[in-house]
Image (cartoon, rainbow, N blue to C red; front, top):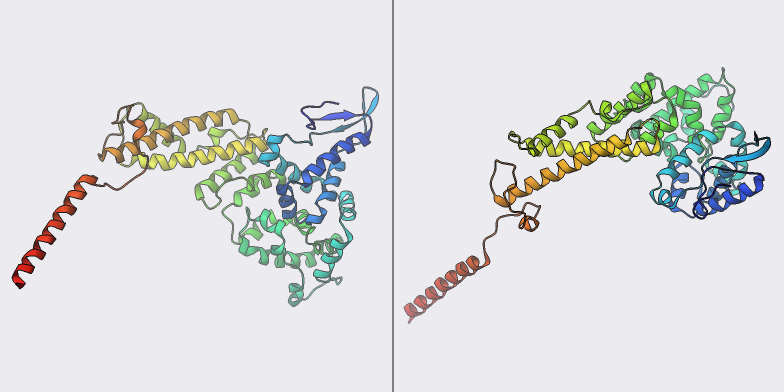
Length: 418
């Protein structure tokens, strides 16, 4: 067995499957104590009481069937145990849980195992709170409201938020249910799909398994008022699309959304996404070159520094997005070293711009972007815009003059009264 520090394992083969399950069960107990594991599985609809059995089923699912290797049967397990750094970051953990839930749990045989693994109380509560499934071939339009709305399922809301406007999810569920009853004459699986979707924790998986092919057509997205992140649908595989949709970026920023759509387009066409090819859209590379030219002593126009600072901040966010995706999808986003080097250049340019802005505020002089302070006094410059204040001595003198005038006027008024 190949073993690293402590309980950390990285791809191993054993003779006895029970030893492997014992090791993985120990790791499952450690996973079940992590709060972000609970949050991730609850976003998929898994109740908190069923986190432990679900993780145990996932652990057994990682155990492959015995294969012939060097004329002997061995059980091989892919990388399942995480390092302490990965546990703290949660990135690798989210990737594994996402892949497990949407690939392994989509198998019909594994669905039966998954159903048997949850507690009976959870199933009873789910069936009691859900509507009664319909068994007729046709359903009147006025009875569609009896079915649970997909917008109320946390897993659907959290996952679809990156691809469709949330206010349209309720209309999406109603429209899809009406399409289901229309398609029931051609597919007998629609009825079982609706029955299974009545389980709240099972709804997201059934939704994406049966309806994702319908969502890929542009007809439904026109009806839903197309989301600005429509470019994510260009990714053919759903796990990478989910990773890109869950990336740490501001989806309200139109430039960031445009860059993400550009990444999806290149990923769909070539699989491998070069960083410079993705940054051709937008003023980012040009802004970096202009700032580096000013750093070397070149001339600049009015407002070039402030505009360059804004563009450099946007470039830094996009580079961080690419680096995050290179960690999750290293084969597709393979130029992590180039992106990191570009990030260092951007950070130096940002630091230079901030220092020059601070110098202009300290000197109270416009124009040149060169530093006007000595290196000894550089640490004393405050990098913030503060209002101009007078010296304390001058303020005290003015206050004394005002007090003397007031006292003199009081004396003259007292003499006049006598």
